[in-house]
Image 1: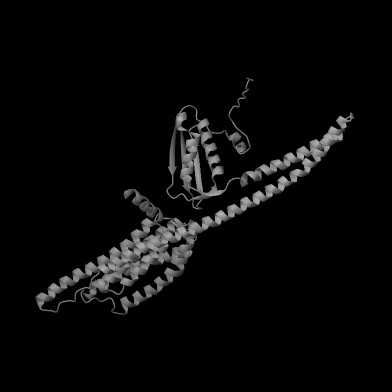
Image 2: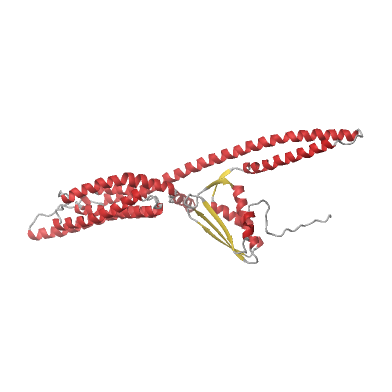
Length: 422
């Protein structure tokens, strides 16, 4: 039964693999979520806390001396307020701040929110505090603002641990005061409600939020791939129609050439001298057809094959096997460095393979004797795949760099082999 279980576990792992949106979409998400939603909510929350701390007795806990609870919360609140003012200024005025730096700022602010909320929970009843429901909202907010698995799960599980610590600290204080009341003859405090269900709900929500976020992101990528596939297919169909139209135009010069050749043949049969004008017509129409075919070849190559979903790492490995077959025993060391987040490419396998094979063959031929080839594949901020093939050969002279994209240009010596008739 094990061989049938492992594929299921691998599929589940692939399904839950973290995927981050592009930097532009991430910046838009932070703008909409943190600046337009969270900041107004925090402003109202800060006003409520300010009123409760300085004009109300909401944070007075019967199990704690008023001065201790009040002083601790007030000091923490001042630090919390100063930091959040800085974060708000960065969100509103920091247009030049990169998305990576902004994500780190949001991560720090979210972690601070969990700590401050746990302090308020400790001062308002611990496990019985009504502020427990704010932890659920904090987990949802972290899932939206931090799509990557590691920071998101750290924030969400640390928030649940903060709630647990606040509750346990409140229980410990209540037990100490209860013992003191037993000694002095006072009334004992009420027992705290069971907290395991609440803690389990926090962990379950953290896991579900990450799972839903991953599924939504995969659905978004699937929609983008489908759209790109449709666009590429339409481009290929347009190229095919254009090639067919150009091919149809070849019939015109062929018809003229056929007529001229017939006239020449008839003149030769009748013993008359060939008409030089007919020869000129044939040459002109051949040149015209050659130009048409040259244009056609460029479009026809694009129309060959079909668009497929390509795994970049697998295609590079296949190109290495074809360009450096093991049976040939080339004295070449190939080093590969593939990024773990390479997206799926929607393109034609033949074109991509041909490019990779040519690059690797050029690197192999550029190495004199033993050498090394470094092949790197990574993703930039625009979700574009960058494949780099490097070798430790002599390189290309600067005076020849502007010619490397010219057709059939090469720096290798050409050898002409003549086969003798058998």
